[in-house]
Amino acid sequence: MGTLIENQSHWAAYDWSQGGDEWSEVWGGSESLWWGTLFPRLRHLLPTGTLLEIAPGYGRFTRFLKDHCERLIGVDLTERCVEACRKRFTGDPRLTFHVNDGTSLPMVEDRSVDLAFSFDSLVHAEVDVLEAYLHELGRTLRADGVAVLHHSNMAAIRADGVPCDNHHWRAESVSAALVAEAARRASLACIGQEPVNWGGTELTDCISVLTPRGSRHERPLVRIDNPAFMAEATRLAGLARVYRP
Image (cartoon, rainbow, N blue to C red; front, top):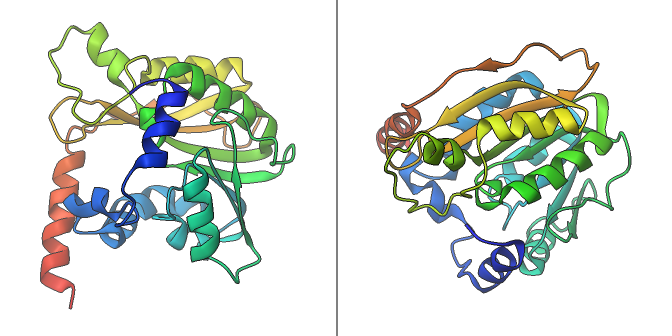
């Protein structure tokens, strides 16, 4: 995707007139994406106490997450996004939003987070950014906390020599295996990974589930490749057309 500075510049200048919901159109909208794809994957972890959302944008998923936690902390490197979230969710004292440097979480206390979540954002972050965030999650997650992160898997595609256009700006230096190894160095255990396709047929993305070493959730890694992720989106879009008033 690019460097941290390039990411910051791009999203600061982006046309946020649709609030990020434009990226949910293949699902038939953000509601379909949340209830049909994300909530089924998160339901075992919800409701929760303190929820950390990394890179919430304009609150595309925050509006759903807030109803499943006692407290939500949103952290984004783009000031426009943070201000938009503060305005959108004003009046709810359980929600706070902060600008960060794109790698660290100084506003989050040690061992204070029950669930960390990021979807459709860190796919643009290169391996140095992912490693930095993993170390911060190693510090901020509670002993039995869990992180669910959507990130790139393009480095695995490139290593296999498979031709694949990077139309969706996935980070070229990140793979599922690299994230699992970086998590280990950050005193985290990678307990689940779902490599998925996005737009095409190759598994360019991955959703990783992480927990601190020694957590009651720790177990050997369970990995399930899912080349039907986009078919899931198409099915949900069809259902939305049938049942949405």
